[in-house]
Length: 60
Image 1 (tube, helix red, strand yellow):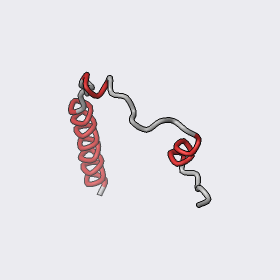
Image 2: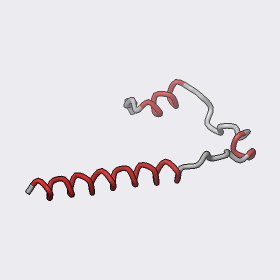
Image 3: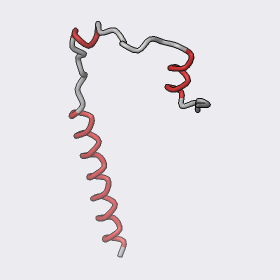
């Protein structure tokens, strides 16, 4: 019985370690293209727009 628990624990530990190393190596930095980096926001900042972005309800 203890042998089965040890094997299961070893298997789970191996899966966790393998997954963590795979995820860590999979992620890469994303370079923002210059077109989007220098793009202006077409929506002007106003109190109403900021309230909408924050999720505040407006009385219509």
